[in-house]
Length: 355
Image (cartoon, rainbow, N blue to C red):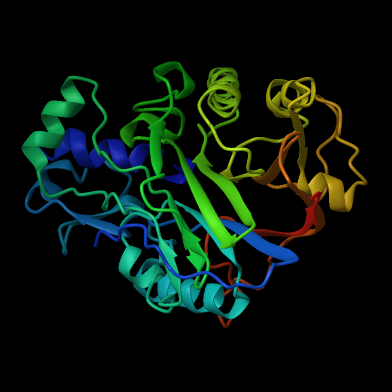
């Protein structure tokens, strides 16, 4: 969850007291595909405003004036987010790109608009919006330090005729110590952050596993430590719970920089030290010839918090070879403003067949 709402989200729920689409089994193309394109994007789907009624007048002196509109009795939660119109434009741009698979973060309150132009895609389970209507229930949860919103904001889209294999979707929250910050540090514990696992069928010989994730946010040492726990959780999940021989793509908002976080050491290096796996970052492979920056080194130009990581298995009949990766900088309004607080990251992979 973006840092810009740290104070606002807390204010809404402290002071307020005084389309679910299932995975589809689509027919697949009989031809063997040679390349797949994937992308990940944070759609910044937090509500622009929350109506708090007459409470607005009671709290107006306790909330910075730029965050509250007393006349309309609303709190400004994410006023510079894409909202309805921006989310529709995001949908149209995804349609134009035509990625084979894409993953979304923060697909909360504008889900319908984000998917408006994407009839040609099947998708996973939508867990719902950030619902601020049940004020008393939310306040009770807040007092008990419980997660306020049981939604992860994650989603996967797969272009037809490719398909999500039915019954294989796994929705997994992070361990408690892999998330830090309830009323501070980006409010990560207000929603059920975590990751999702899918199996995608491209043709009769090509299945690829996908994990879409959203890691703890923030630059503080406690945030960094929480992400480290999350990386170890991912490693354990990949090595002990995934039972297929398929190659795997992990993508999403890792909230990691290689010069700050131990992502390479705790996930990529650990996988590579296991003879069953070969792992790498598609952007690092394609733009830096596979050379990772040292932790504590200067920031790397062009690196973003979003990552696309591939994992090949030694006993698989196919492997993924990244041949392109880049930020997608044309996700903008007509006046050039950025549509979301993250540009998408896209990559393409050659399918290398070993049989």
